[in-house]
Length: 91
Image (tube, rainbow, N blue to C red):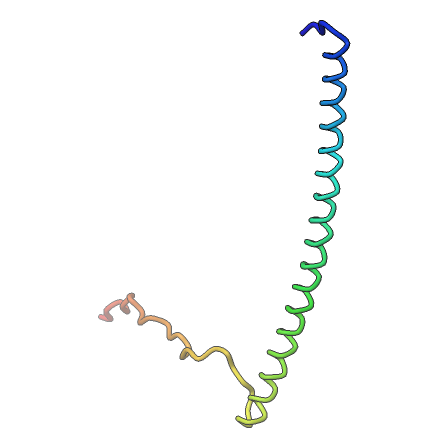
């Protein structure tokens, strides 16, 4: 593309400056979002730790009320299926 006049050059330079300004703003926005994400992630880790501590406390309290260790496994133990092999006949 050939520039036919100084005005064309000025327009191109103005456009480049405008694009540079937009890119700078996008970088700021990206950094801001990255910082917000980090803060939210750290808050999420705090919430997770609080939930784990509460869960442990509730398990201890439940054990105390039941007078025995609390088990989260409420299923009956699985029995082995009956053997499908038969003893060889004796003679």
